[in-house]
Amino acid sequence: MESRIIAVFDFDKTLTAGMSIESSFLKYLVENRKLRAQNLLNAALYYMKHIFKSPDEALKRNKMYLKGITTEQALLWVRDFIKERGDKLISMKNLQHVKSHKDAGHTTILISGSPDILIDSLDMYLWFDLVYTTRLKSVDGIYTGRINGPHYYGKTKADLIKRLKDELDADLKESFCYADSIKDIEMLSLFGHPVAVNPDRHLIQVALRQHWEILK
Image (cartoon, rainbow, N blue to C red; front, side):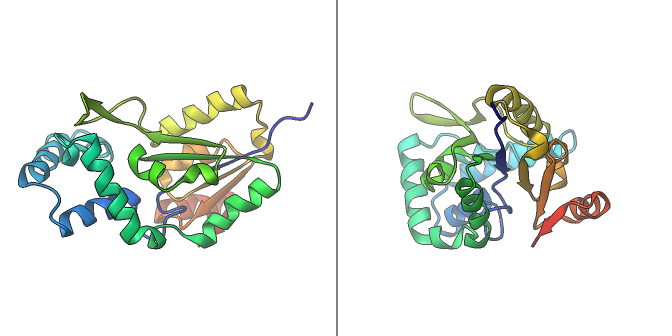
């Protein structure tokens, strides 16, 4: 029995058109005055507390702008956000690469550090066989501003791939991975066919040196 070929995709700036989906969502909330001053203060205080010790913690794991917001209210905001800007969020050109892999019979996998409420609302399950997103923690239907479970960023993505390799009996040498950031280098390096998509300046240097495919 042949091993499975998988095609793994990062989301933000790999499949999105421009900025990350969470940045777009936060911009939407601020522009439409959805958030109270306390929500923005919560995020700012969390940022200042962690920025010098762990910039990734301060920026990527900072969900304090949703602290105290009910899950029901947040979902309504997400639905309005997707309705207003949904057709501008995704790069249809890059999404065609997902379709090509599905047509080839490959197992398509999305791994994203973006919040689950945003990814789920975009119906990514129509394109991907498996979807891994960062889950937001809530207590009694109210968001705490914390993350519940793994935050899929950097090394955590690579660790997930190593686990999926065994669970899916995947042949990574024959498999594909698409990502945009130097933070994804550990994950990309696991694959026989790494692809740098709209790469940041650090990743493009590695991609050129390693002769990886580059998509812009």
